[in-house]
Image (tube, rainbow, N blue to C red; front, side):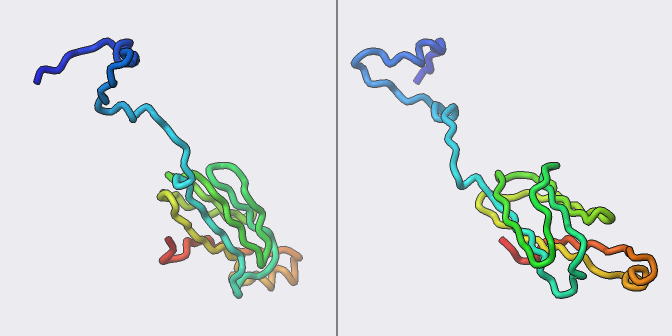
Length: 141
């Protein structure tokens, strides 16, 4: 069977009463937005060893999405694909580069934790370093 080369204009015409033959790949130009292309992340700050003060700032791809205080959690929907999730408490920064699949729900835990001398500094100086833990919860999907 010999294939015939047709100009693009001829492919777009329906040719009157004659049924149009389907061309290979003609559906490639059709794009539909589907909610199955979305993924989500949840970041919680509910750990027992959290010191309970100083906020944690969250951003996804450079856009701030939340300011977490102790006992709070936030869920954020975003398109599937690669993303950079950052958390900081103004002193320490943590970053996760992740690739989310359609329908995936990634969970993270954020903790402001006391380190060596935290409460000693707090007592004498009125301020102290609070260390940040920001980890993906293992086994999520």
